Image (tube, rainbow, N blue to C red; front, top):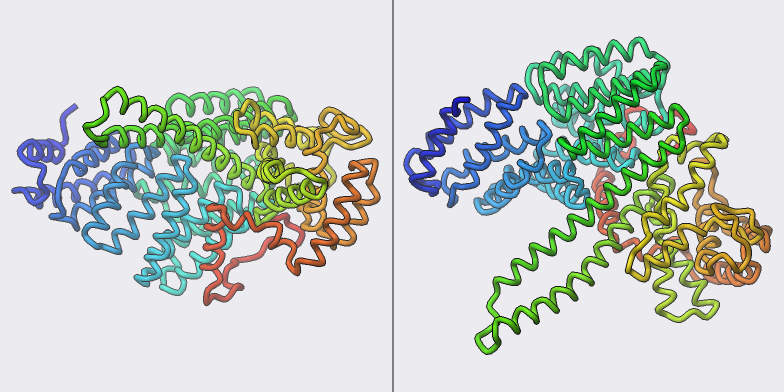
Length: 634
């Protein structure tokens, strides 16, 4: 295959000099931009190879000369590789884009750089860095009064919350994008259409299938036929959302016709990400339309392909596969696939943490330790320090990772995300009340935050169901205790070891009628008996999609009625007295019990977004059309 002339000449120029102000660099960058404009209209392996190599070449330039053209090239390389589904190749380009935009004091490009950086980290499974970057992009866009930048940031935040399962916030952010687009006379822009598409997906996930279908149908009717790859990316997502809504409405004939169109579209604008979407949609249609063997085989193959060739698609592929097994009521296999997804996410975070510490180790090893010590002694000292730092930091990173997973599980039932923190604090206070020492109380506080981590493996369809659950679905929800214990098992962190038995046993009843093992009396670990009281009280007083919140006094009366049946009688007496005293002493009991949640970076970012949504804006403008009454929100 012949080398592209632009890449060939770029390579020759770099052989002579890496200086960005070198002879011919200006004209080379102009040619590169022209070639980028030509190739970004298509989506193919050849075009992707061009963008990868161009990114490598741009990274080799040194200095700040020709910054404007370089920044534009870097951003468009990032955008193409992200859209194609290759964030790994895009990441170093995005980092260089950020560095050069900062070094040359270019706020408009810095805004774009943060947007690209956030999108790439979202694809790589790092939601913390992703949301931080989006917030910085949003703040810069506000400073610049950049309507396009504001729309892009709100849109990406909306997509981010959809991925996280926070559909109410996704709708708020997408609606804000639509409002900004209208204010800046961008109402007919591609960004506004994508925001409405995000609203479709969020509504569908919230259970408003009829509303999602109406809006998706209207968006498709108004859509223009994609002419370039970026337009095709948005259309693929729109078609996927419409197909899912049609399936839920029982319109399988229309769903199949839209799937056929989707297949033709992806043939014209092929990329790994879009091909996976097609396989998932067609496989699910087969399952729903009465050919489960063929459909599940397709979905299993898609998941296998994602594991070996397109790892970014693993979470989506496993999620759809689990849904297919739920559709055919194969609960055992659905649970197994869900556990695979949980293990994948857990291992990804842990591997990422270890990689960071390896990089830290390499950086420290390059520092001089002085001539007085021998190299052997330096290596010994370094190894001892490294082992201590690694043990402490890895334990902390695992604990933080598990807390994020627990918040992600809790937040689908409790919008504040503070349920685990309140349960942890109340459990620690009860432990102190009965004489536990300070260290044990603190350990229980941290461990109790993870008690419902197993719910991350339960689909929203079941978890948020406000109707009577079928027996099989009850079994699925009950299994969250075992899933949670499995996630927390075999840890060398003391708090996590305690958390494992709490996750497994906090739904056991004093009279032996609980689950999963039907343990009885003092055979139930005391920590789990304490957490059981705090958990039920917090759930009662905050409500769930399937049950309204009740006042504190009524919740305490209900708990008292279960003394000796569901709860340890002695602990119940201490608990009732404790909560009544806390309620008298604290005007805002939630704020007191949820204080630790204020230190969560994830919850801080969510609060910042809510604040930015509310500042100077009419809250009525944040909705296109509210879901029907009774629709369960996360």
